Image (cartoon, rainbow, N blue to C red; front, side):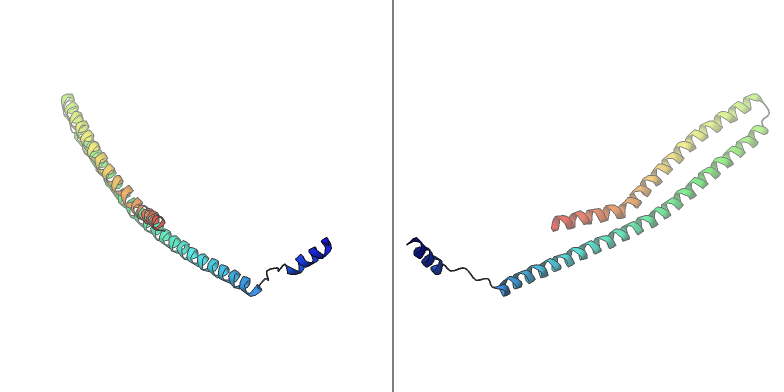
Length: 152
């Protein structure tokens, strides 16, 4: 009896049929979605790389300009210092007494300290502006990238 009952049960059991065309369609849809997502990711990556390149080029050009400005300012300061030194030397050579030499030297040192402080302030202002100008393109690109990431 058990064999007959088992045979009957086996005959009554239906196994689900596997439709290969449905599976193929699902696999194709999944693959197409993956390709589309890859294309979108590549486009975003490409855009990001181009923006970064532009920011770096802009930074380089700005750094080059700022460097030139700083060099010219340095040369002008060195020239002014050298001229002041030679003028002072000429005045010392023309001095008639020791008290006049001391007076010239004191005045020269006071002027040198004042001029050095003024030059330091000028260099600080130029250097601060230079740092801001050089970092601005990168800062802007970074802020845009963060904004894009938050939007996504």
